[in-house]
Image (cartoon, rainbow, N blue to C red; front, side, top):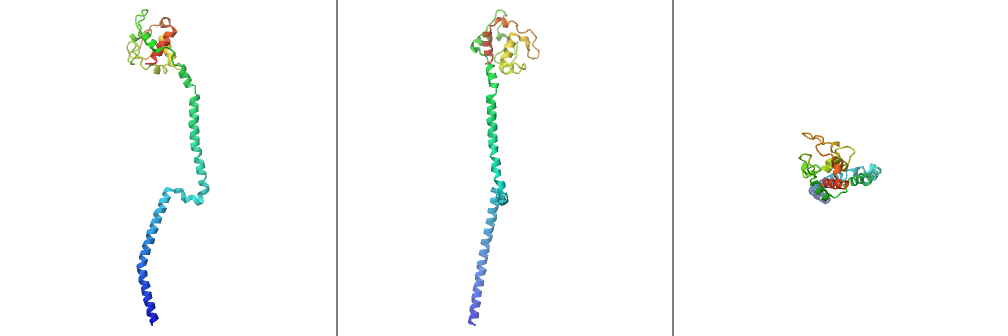
Length: 204
């Protein structure tokens, strides 16, 4: 009888302990499971390929290998482009097309009144604007000149425009008539003087 009472008391105590401990244990388990679920989601977000590691391990190795040539190819492309630009004849052509004259002296000649024709270059051309005076304004002429006649550099075009002005007449409204500019500058200016004038025009 005493054993039965002791067993009943023990059972009652165990039951009471279980009823208190079980909810605490269950709550801790639920919190742990929730934390594990959040951690798993976070790991999936930051390392989406981690789930492929068991089956995709061999595939994961080529990805860095494939990624490596991309920068290498980009670098090679840039280097090749740089090498092409450096080796291009364009800079040489540009350098060769630059006038060799004295721009300061050319400005003096531009403003010099030639008695043979009765006026100076500055009589008919604005040097500081593109607006028409009698002839076209010459501001920025070295840039526009390169687009006037196909196959002619700016230097060649400006030289021809001085010594043979009817070779190409700039479109305008009203149009410039042929012969408006004297046709005798090839005889009035020496080649050195022409080079000086052209050098000055390149500074405008």
